[in-house]
Image (tube, rainbow, N blue to C red; front, top):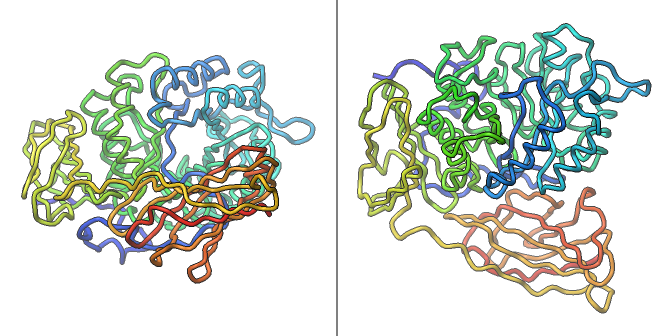
Length: 540
């Protein structure tokens, strides 16, 4: 007997979509998205680190620089983590005489641009905290003057761009207003960030000091790149918090809140169940840490670590950098898992992947070791002999029917199950012919690479390289050989007319120096996957 945990369903605007069954064999993205006209700053869920969960307000530039160093030396950067995000308490409580935000000189004596430059020098990206109403959370709860972006959206966006900011956490810390009003305020700052021409990820939280409005509004993707689905996550398995209340949630409450919102996640738009508690203050057991990391990856959620990277155990490092688990989170199909069976404390979750595989999580929320069993049909696979790998133990095998495991209390068995016939291999890297512009040595050239494929779709990348002269703007043209189409693109402005497709650089690309390169990517639909394209690159 399933217990009634789907508290949020009645509040969600798109209830008609919630009854849809998990659909057959995984394929291309369910709905073709219009091709964006601006660069997509986060075509896959962002991976990074944030200072709040461990350090709260006890931050300074030395420890942030040490954390950037540790992100590289620990192997996290090599595993894909990029963003180093400075949370609340970095700023003074008053603006300067010109109305600009000011860093606290006692904590950041070199200033925020110098900090961003250091982070960039490590090959990482720089993130910062801000608030859309009058006060940040620290200012709100400490009764301090306010320095939020309210009324300063353009000024603050331009300042952040000048500092080299790549990510903004925008935290609504105020009890006022409904979701629609919140969205309008968030949109003002999103527009200001886009107007800077710099690709900056906007991460919003509408729920701080506020009733949980996130699950009641399906339009967050129009005003941000990622949005918090609940109040803050506690470093605990469960808090008992009812999701409509203004209270911290545990891991299990976060699962129940995000599950009905699964159709909102897609490339560039992410449900965010909050920053990771893996390794934070040793509050979770090793088993709970693995379950936590597993389920966030199953959700295609942003993975923003919150532990002290400078002093983490080997076990915590292994959990955060497990490449097989990270591959689920970073899968280019960007689908959120569906809870396909709910037997009280025992659950089965399934997530389709771009190569036709399915990720399967057998989760034990309760006490005591329990056997959890599902079958191929239930997780969306056809009959036949399928291979599997358990992603924490590395155990492999085959199955023609059931997927089953003994799962310890608060534990998970996490599988990647590959259809019979094996995983389709990606076509080889392909360089297609390119025409030249007026420069006899070639004004620009372009090459095409297939970076992923699945049943009925593929992901491609085009690299544009300037010739012997700088190129201030470029256009790449091609047509697909068998009527394939583009469903989403990033880092370029892509348009199509019949079979003709053109991509032009967007403002943030800037001028390409002689021999310099820029890349853009896209998701395509249709088969067979084109292994080569006849690209024409023209300097414009």
